[in-house]
Figure 1 (cartoon, protein in one colour):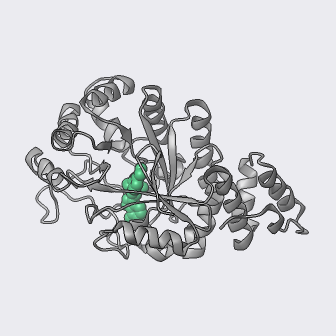
Figure 2: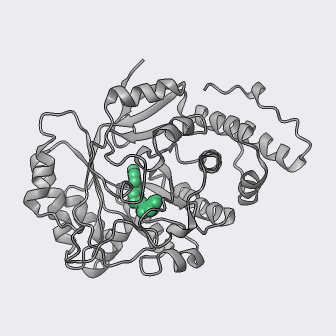
Figure 3: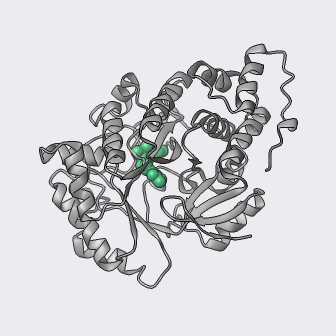
Length: 374
Ligand code: V47
């Protein structure tokens, strides 16, 4: 891991590339054109070195994970996103809706364990309102009072808050009173309206996603940001997406981590596109690390990416590999990910990190290090 500036060979005949390399080495921010140029012209080895350098400055050799589980209250959804393999209609034999008691039962499994976080996200249920979403958080905290609740994508939040005729800020305050601690990064996809019109025409816009996260940050609720890549978007769309998040982060400093999510092609209407290869995954992690200079952490989400690719991503700027999961999420297995029952022990997570050359460290949900596995 430990990248040395001397190891980076800026002696390229490509002057444009040389000037971007100089910027990264001197810690200067790259601009949107630089980002596109890196995607189009930098080779894999160079991207790895630059991304490792950028990551090492922020995070040293620590590669983080946490002890977490998911609750997915329903896969009924009022929206029909074309990339989604998870959405089902009422009456479908593969649909589910958990009751508050079932949610409590899901939480009960973690009494007397050292799990620190629950990630709650699901479809946008046609009938539930903001107080029901609050009751789900309350139900979990009744069973696990000290758990960090990272809950609801901006898409769920936009729908229920607008339905309740509150402002984003008022709605988020209400959920915070129920026990909401932070917001996951889902629903961002690609912000460009022309891409959204094709892949998720019905749901909240990129501007709405950004406005929700801004309101969250202003109310002391930290969050993550995602980018769904590897479908119909161009490199320009990816860079515009990252630019919008980077700009908001300059204002609010509320994003903890950036999570590129690779489009998985099984069982959804966009499956005909296929999937990008692993080299593209690694290149994308590296450019993301270099571009997102003001978001400290970059996550490779192993249930989506697969374990081998996650291990490689650690040498392309990634410093966070998410958590133990405990076979509690279906979003990616239903979309064809390798891990059909995603579960990791701490031993396995630490082994992956060590094999990739990093120092494993357990973090909490707001990225304080709890334990270093030296
Ligand atoms: O918004 C859905 C993506 C997201 C597919 O904040 C797909 O820590 C690929 O946001 N192929 C939800 N991706 C999950 C999410 C998330 C996951 C892990 C950690 C965090 C965090 C957030 O999943 C959706 C969408 O972008 N998604 N279907 C698919 N077929």
